[in-house]
Image: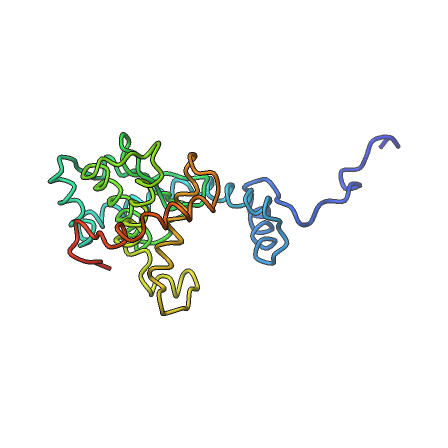
Length: 235
């Protein structure tokens, strides 16, 4: 080998980065580096995106199976669907879509497209149920209250408060086991407030987390107490 031609092994490899590739060696090496804390935030994101892309078909199939089951058997999903039907619309397996999402979120609602469920994030039926219920509250609010999503942060904040409160995603058991939130006093309210502020901050009209928290606080009293279409918080 000529002296000026480097050996493939002459350059020191970065043992903390992400290794591209779908072969078994790359998958296990990346998994071990992440599990042992040897990946930076940037390379962890690369790892997650590669894993999600590789599992996309299986994740979406599982999400769709859970979606179809919940549309048939979940009390809260069936109830919300009935209330939405009375407002002249329907949410079903044709407009509740399971997709791979690049952002770490459970899903989203679009007034024209329907509901998106992030199949790579929602790894079990309970989380799918919470996500569908959350987005169904947004759909209900859009139809019932004509929410101005694009240019009114107060409207968006109110719907986020209601969706987090009514969907069940802030129930104590979920916060305790999944989120590691161990406080009992005011846990439910703090969860709703936190999740609503995070969602508002993600909107393009919101400048920062300070503005998000401010808007949530401004509409909190009336929106947190508004449990329509339920008589009270269901879950």
